[in-house]
Length: 117
Image 1 (cartoon, rainbow, N blue to C red):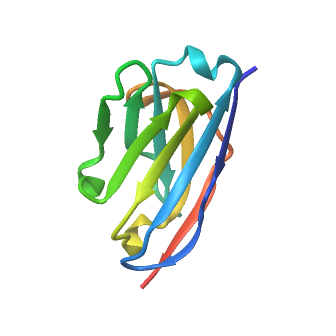
Image 2: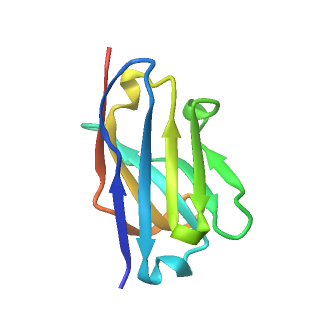
């Protein structure tokens, strides 16, 4: 059974920071990569960042490059998304997802991130 549990969402002012965590268990380990996606109200879900379990190579949506950092802790089976210099347009529900880079085979429940201007 696959389980992905996100935490760390909340309300932050523009320019502030948040760190999201995703604890993975079960078949999540069979994935090649872990991703973060987000979905803003009235918009489609979009890719934000990914990291490969094997070598830690990272991938980012252009709009978050230089502001967001994805990392992994293999010992604790946890993936993080550090979000700095946040903007109101970062407001969304953020989802952790296992699969390959840019594609999810299974999803977490999502965590709300709200950036106030």
